[in-house]
Length: 118
Image 1 (cartoon, rainbow, N blue to C red):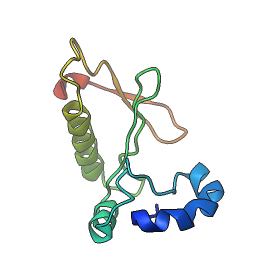
Image 2: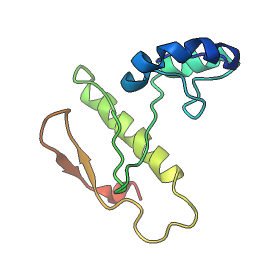
Image 3: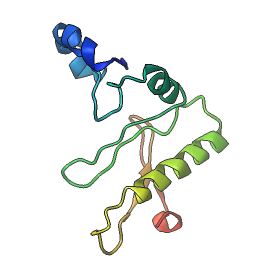
Image 4: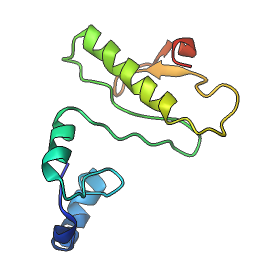
């Protein structure tokens, strides 16, 4: 991920063909185009992740790596689910989280009870 100030973005334009498809291009919505570069770098090194919802309402986001301890993965899952619940729009009615499945990149999914996160 690249962090840049707004005045440098014009110089990064030619690199867009390479950085864009990899998801490395700085983006104001992701917080990587800012005047406070030190704060943005500190957040990224601390493990800040971006998550978005696809058309069918599914959220895909990494919560850790295979080398992480099970306790660390559990903490990351809880923090992620709390962030998803906090992002719930006020107009959303009914069950906001219908199902939760955790899986490795190419492995089978393991269902998780979403009742603890609602």
